[in-house]
Image 1 (cartoon, one colour):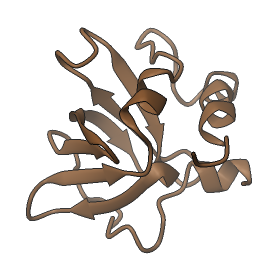
Image 2 (cartoon, rainbow, N blue to C red; image 1 turned 120 degrees about the horizontal axis):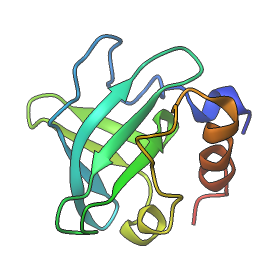
Image 3 (cartoon, rainbow, N blue to C red; image 1 turned 45 degrees about the vertical axis):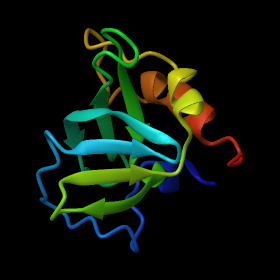
Length: 117
């Protein structure tokens, strides 16, 4: 998968540019992982930051836009195509770092660019 594709929203996900996803619940393939804390739909740099709350105490995770399977605006839920363990094992999102920095995003791209389990 090319880097740009990792950071782009799937055309069949139901996501529409400009939709505010902050506060939406996030569901992995095997259960809830938290709520959207922030997101961007910048071309080639789309991602969600998920506040995992009590599931992984105090951790925020960054999910590239391409892992979003479906957005249900009525239920305010984002469904992703990764398991809870895959998300838990992802590199930790650090607010102090600039998410749009290509070097910082590269570690997430390498992790999420892995073939689906």
